[in-house]
Length: 523
Image 1: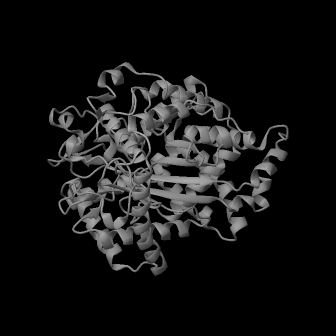
Image 2: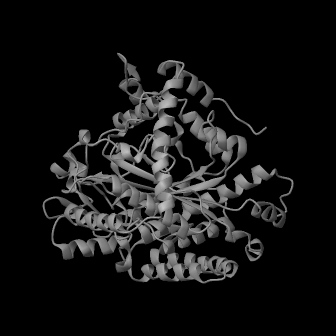
Image 3: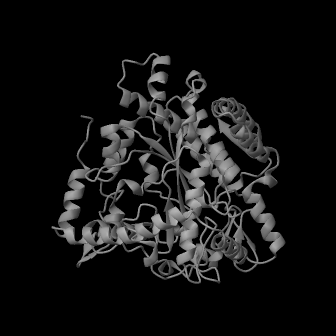
């Protein structure tokens, strides 16, 4: 804790990535192209798309103050609403009304090799898992610690014989393992997807094969105690990937496992085919097409150079930051996240770093998966117990044990910054442990009951009310000018990339995977 008292932990750097579907006035996903007035989704640094042409993704710069990241994100939304015509941004994680798999348009990134690769990768996700799963939205929260904390921690722990890069990466993996042990707490506190539109389940809903869900009205399904159906096996799921058994014990294990997965063929994917009569169905027939296909609630990250894959960047220069990926959009918050939540997560991540974090054996890895499954499916059940080591512990009791540790970290952060915002965030949000009705998931079901209609109708009304708010509130005019310039420059950059291609797409992909299999040890 001494480095915190010296003021070094106060300079966390945070960035937000927020996804959201574009919908029409009836709450249905739109089939319109990504608006040209928002810039090129291939090259724009802040406004792009995720899986679908209709799934907007905003990316903020990195900031030291949570309020600055939220301010930038808010202006991205305001700018978007200035360009949308009779469309709204869906504020929930589970998708709007769908009309089957084909109603979700795959994002098109232009004719360049890199743009075609992004499109074919998404075609591969379709043939492997279907488009419906890819229409789910969420918040990705990126956090890095200040560089000058690492040598101090390294000295305090007596590990000066390790390289600085190796030590920093090892400690980030310590953080990640503790996150994996305790991420169920974030799912409980911030899960906001206990209900969904029947169209999300397609034939399974029509055939009555939704034994985990109960009907409400004609079009709504919900689970009474669920927190985050987005993170359940109804949402992101991949039985093939589950065999990879990545529990984040070391950087070398993580890199090696992912590299093996992008190099090892899977029989079912081979039967689909890769390029068939000139039609690219997927990038490869391997377990993973590229490393980003691996689903996880947290990832170690490093900004990659133009000739590197994500794991090569990690291998060469170590972990730079971590990406938290298990956060639902909170439909009751205009941006899906707010400052108290950010400060709670910051405190939680630092607690994960500063707590003991032994390696995770396979049997514990399975127990952690079971804990997360229980919380997403029935986290507000007052009788729910979790497996913590060799103990069965009520969720509420274990939550308070963690919160006691969080208060110590929050107090140190507040001492550094000269306020009480971290401790206030921890204390306020910890109330949800004793009163589950305060959680976003419970608020959603309660609001749905008061509304009296279908879930999709209720969320549509939220979307339209929030849209009016963003249309009516002013944005920073310097940012408005910046965003207008980025529209033009991003389109020009895409044009230049397309004009510069010198090889066929087939050769481009061959070269890419040849490079991707190469180790990139540190210089």
